[in-house]
Image (tube, rainbow, N blue to C red; front, top):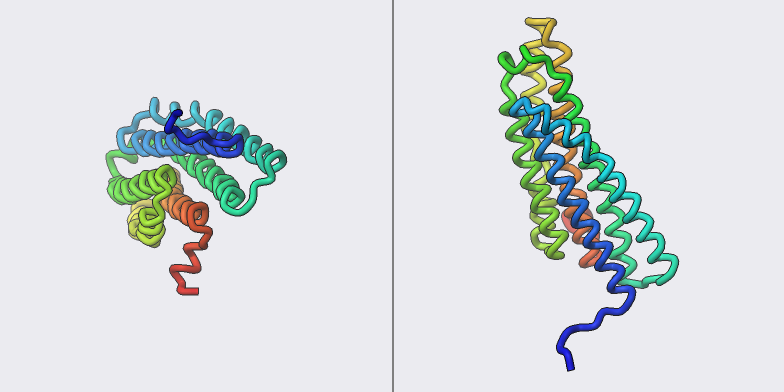
Amino acid sequence: MSGSIKLGPLAHELFAVQQQVAAMGDLAEIQFARAIQALLAGDLGAAGSVAADEPRMDAFEVAIDRDLVSILARRQPAARDLRLLLGLSKTVTYLERIGDEADRIALRVTRLPKPLRSRVSFAEIQSDASVAGMLLRSALKALQQRDTELARAVYHDAKGASKNYEGLARKLMTYMATDMRLITGCLELLAIAKAVERVGGHARSLAQAVVYMVEGEDVRELMLGL
């Protein structure tokens, strides 16, 4: 007699969907990293690879949504399984948004004028991108391991994690005031910085979804003591 645990049809289907979500998460993390590499290194090849992978993100979203609807219709899951499906649906939305932000960053990198690189430091964006990338990795790890303690830490740490946007905006305003040729490039940089900030926000939402899936609680209410 085998000691392995036999999974029912619903459990098998849920596991398959979770594997797809994990693969989508890996791609989202790669896209964001490549977009930041494109910015910091002036690597237009990396920017192009982000755009090239965007259809893969879309395909993941369509396939996972289709499978979730199919499971809901055929299996009519209850309680914990239903909560898992709803949480996975939210997760897919957040991952798709992260992919969109990475695509926007990559596109804007291709629009940056070359003289801007010798005039403007990207240090603030690099710092915030490092934090956002760390939060995203931790949120995906929490999702994979169903680790609500880690998810709560991500949710807490992500609040106000993007600290440099306002300082960058003030600095770029100074550049634009002194040299009108830099206006277009500086505006592109501000949009990139805002996209980085949103990636950190989506990582926070991923962490929130993990707590909901595993424990059925809204971490926002827990943090507020409601």
